[in-house]
Image (cartoon, rainbow, N blue to C red; front, side):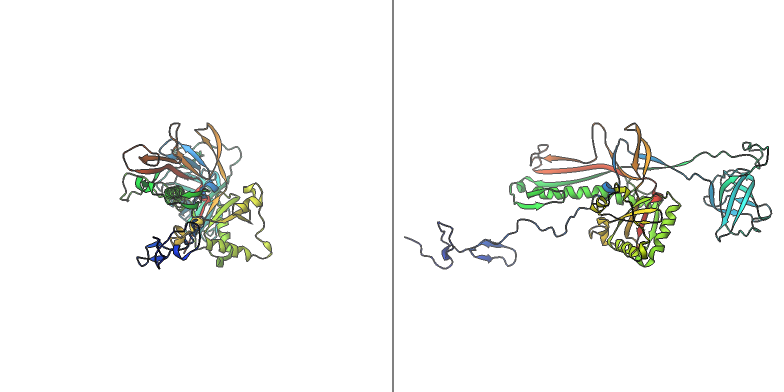
Amino acid sequence: MSLQPQFGSLIPSQKQEVLNSNYLQWTDKAGANFVDFAQQYLPEVYEQEVERYGNRTLSGFLRMVGAEMPMTSDQVIWSEQNRLHIAYEDLTPAYGASNVINFTGTPADVINVISVGATVVVLDNFGNEAKCYVSATVPGGAGVGQITALPYTAATLAAAGLTGTVKVFVYGSEYVKGSTTPNYNAANQTDGYISVDPQFTQYHNSPIIIRNKYVVNGSDMAQIGWVEVATEDGTSGYLWYLKAESETRLRFEDYLEMSLVEGEKVAAGSAITGIAGTQGLFAAIEERGNVNTGFTAAAGIDSFDAILKNLDTQGAIEENMLFLQRQTALDFDDMLSAISGGAQGGTAYGLFENSEDMALNLGFSGFRRGSYDFYKTDWKYLNDASTRGALTGPSSIEGVLIPAGTSTVYDQILGTNIRRPFLHVRYRASQGDDRRMKSWLTGSAGGAFTSDLDAMEVNFLSERCLVTQAANNFVLFKGL
């Protein structure tokens, strides 16, 4: 007995034919979420997921501006030179006939190393100055240091027009014929030459341990639903649970960089115990570098020139990189376009082997102002809505200027002098364990056989810190 086709019945066809007896309906049995296949034609399903946020990764900034080097200790210590010439600020003159300048300024315990016979320039905060001869000197700290500065063109400092606190710097010396330069004698504090010992400033940073984990249980691994994906690290294909593992790895790689950019040391008043933290890029510039607040196109080239003048007082490194958020990048474009006649000049692209194409391929555009070359690019970390791009106002970071110079240091691992970027990463490593980027499997699924846990755990670990040398040459741009 054959079945007669009736409305709603399903009769399979021996061939792939379009008949009213094998028509599959698409019905919604649960209102909005649950559907089944009862339809003649299968719905059109996109296998490839839509990359609606583009490239979501944020890392790459430190790889672009620095280098990575191993370290074996819990701490990395480096020394930075102090200034070569002798200068003091915020000193307090007596403004009497004695012409004494007291070292009671900032800091109050500064050591006076200006010798008898030195010639100095004394300047106040109102544009007045006097060239002086130092006839007497008292070293020492805690506010007891002083010099007697006799103006060349007036009887007293006050008569030379000076007022208020002053800045003093040494520009040379002058001695009478047949004189000697005797060493300083503590018993006679108005005589002698003070030997200046070179000083350096020491800084340190500690690595932090960064960890992450991805877990999938054994049951879910047996129920695989495939989807074609293309990830930011260049891989593509059909993945399911490894798709999530891949994103966990990408997120962890971003954390490796974000931790070194945002890191903070644990302060004395913090309630955090057991960890020390690490000094990231922003914290290092805030403490030892330069902060520019409220840079806008409306401020014009004068605002940027003020930054250059400040760089002149620091290392005056010729080539610098600007990593900016979108609005600040547009402000720079507007500022440069407002300069008539191409006054901003060209640039030699020396940082990129004098190849403009190489600079453009890396996303940089260059301009020259004064004696400086600048290479400008957007920094996605400052634009992404899930990170700094969501912040505005006084706490917002709108860009950073990073010098492209290097410093020569002795590397204990290599046993030789090497040149390192001012900004570089140190990671923990030894002959037995490299902790730059570790990953391993645990559990009892997915090829792991380390425990009775019915799951596969993908573990990630790194131990690293950022070394920000010569932070006085860095500039942090902040919002108003």
